[in-house]
Amino acid sequence: MTGDIDLGGIGTRLLGKAETVPGVSEAEAYVSSNVFTMARVETLAVPGVRGRPSIQQLKRIEDVGASVKVVVNGAVGQASTRDLSPGSLGRLVDMAVGSQTDGSRPQLRVVGQPRREDGAEPAH
Image (cartoon, rainbow, N blue to C red):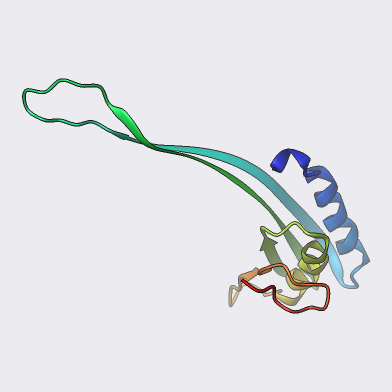
């Protein structure tokens, strides 16, 4: 899944969009791809019984995401998403600009579920 994603291209696209927004003096883009493997191992410690530990659960989790941080008129804004669709990435810089704060009131902006072309939330 994550092997098909151009992480460098996503970062370049986010920074390119930030350069076009009036008032943005600085921008940072972060794109990450992580793979986690979790195993639950159980040992049956029964008195008088010998045995080996057994793996009860094995899970592989892939996680990708992007975030952008901008400075607008001395205030910092940041937004992040796990949705790497073009529409979501297109909104990410705008959300970061809209979340700017001077540090007195921290805000967290996360781009939510992907939207359909008509702007509606997808049916679950």
